[in-house]
Length: 239
Image 1 (cartoon, rainbow, N blue to C red):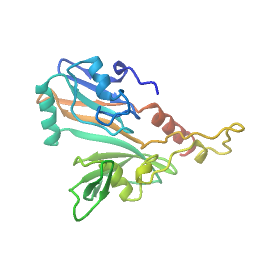
Image 2: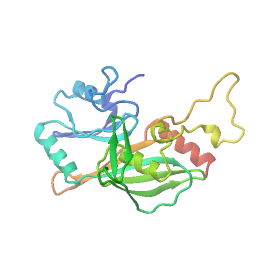
Image 3: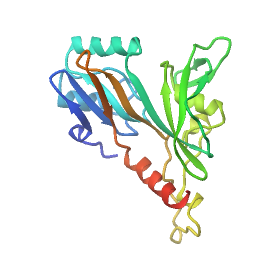
Image 4: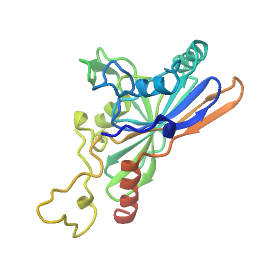
């Protein structure tokens, strides 16, 4: 896999912050990285003092904030802790769903190091607000706002209502193939069709917070290529 130049990921930079559009299929931090190419590694090559203020799952793309100094890191961390940073994710699920700020409030418990489950006895409170962002015949692009920060929260909550993310095998999601929506689709002879999306289709679309203090600040990340192309095909063949 060719790792991107971190300069191509930068959405915003000033003397205190670097805000990136994380690609899918790259881990955020070094601890769980396969090899040396974590986002943290790439950040340090660009700015040796850079510190990621939060993390996104390996599959998840989108907005992620890094601080250039300890004071800024602490400031952003406190904002996350106090829920002063509004997060908007976009997720692709199967089925036509009409949601308008519907709450999914189910307690989540981490199970081992790589999975979470709904547990009404021992789970921690978790709340996600979901809305339909774009509708297709057989799929829905969902806007999800997690008001708590549990492990795999959006993935678990959507799976719990029968809507696992496209490509999210861990929670029952299946890859998306163009042949599902395009009539008379055929691959060339002796060629197996490759999925359009074979990862958990989750993108951290927007963050909103005050920066500098007292000034509204909003940052939005474009979709990665696999999700963007999938949406184009859905608009063309599945409306």
